[in-house]
Image 1 (cartoon, rainbow over the protein chains, first blue to last red):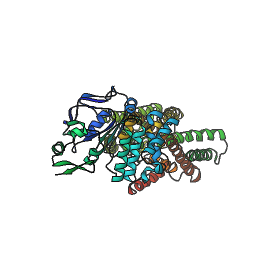
Image 2: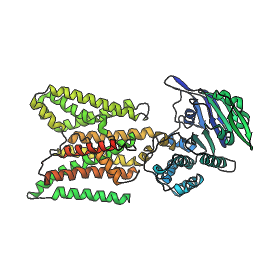
Image 3: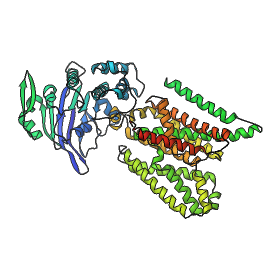
Image 4: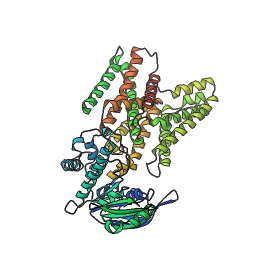
Length: 253
Length: 314
């Protein structure tokens, strides 16, 4: 479980997060939504123990993430930050193998190779495995990065806008895979994902955490929390949820 | 393939060293060999140090057009020489014990670099760009101060400063070389020890940190090694600004790999090969018709312009 208690983060005199307290239950997908500048990325960084906190405490599986050593943090949480520009001459497989770095420290063993192969397969990268990262499209690179974080094999996977460069097919592809891999019966992985596409959140998220101006607006199961009035209030524009062919669609009203 | 190329580079250096030592060797062989060996050792150690330091610095700065010289090592060295001549006079400067001068210069250069790194990165190693820009500005300031001080010197003292601020391998003191070699070889081994961590650091801060790497620590250790490598080699022979850029670019071109355990030795071998073979050509074939460092700076400068105009990826 992730527990955030009274978390406040202030940068250059501005409160980015204000007194946030919430819990993330294990398993499934939690969508982190909110307008630009709400503090979503900062919250993810704080959970991963990478943000300088002003006040409060974050624990993941009982580990104090703010004071934990880097390998301890990396064994609990994998974070994929947004818009990472890796320019090293890496193949896709080499990039994914970095996901196991905290386990192999540059010398992958048999178990590492097995998990690297599994991540490559899980995110449909087998045909691209030996391609140079620089030769891939933005969406293909994004999938390779998600696979790298998946290969880290942590109980928690934090993804900051991983769908931003993906076409609808690959959005569906990645979310279907994440959805399947986080169901009970699997290795019980849990995903917290920053989403701007509310339709994707409505379709795949099990839980919703909504932030606005650094404050927690709502947190809970999607079916209970994700309503038209809540979204309209959150984004400051009229939004409603309609059911089409059994799926929830978020549309302007 | 990478390992084979590394062996090839080692072979090239061995060939260059062999030619440098044995070409046109006449009696008294023992004496000449001893002289040549001292110079060869200085060329190898300095070339390897500058090549390694540049690859380390470029990895940390995530920019293949930068060299450690950009943070003002060269300018500080020139400023120290000028200040010494200005305060002690030409005669006093010449009378300085060379070992003490070497030790003082090394300590001042390392201390200045560590102070700069420590002050600017005290909140973590995320602001490398600020470090580089501050280094550039400090370099300009020190060059300006050195220029002003040089205007106050008389012509004979000015020529002493000029002589002291040009890199030269011709009069390397054996004791200084031995001390520098120990520092530089230890630093090179230290760089190899953190090579695996540098592979992850090269992915960028926000990729490396979640992978469990103590990013700030690796960056500080690497910067400390850069400071030791550049300061010691500069104090030993003088500043060679663009050798690192030349070496690092050739290392990346010769070895298409991201593994620093291969890139660092490659840069060390190439740096040493450039200096040894260049010195061989100028000394033995061209009869000292030009100066090696001038040609290295020229070639490095042209490469720098090429890299800027080519709009490289990093």
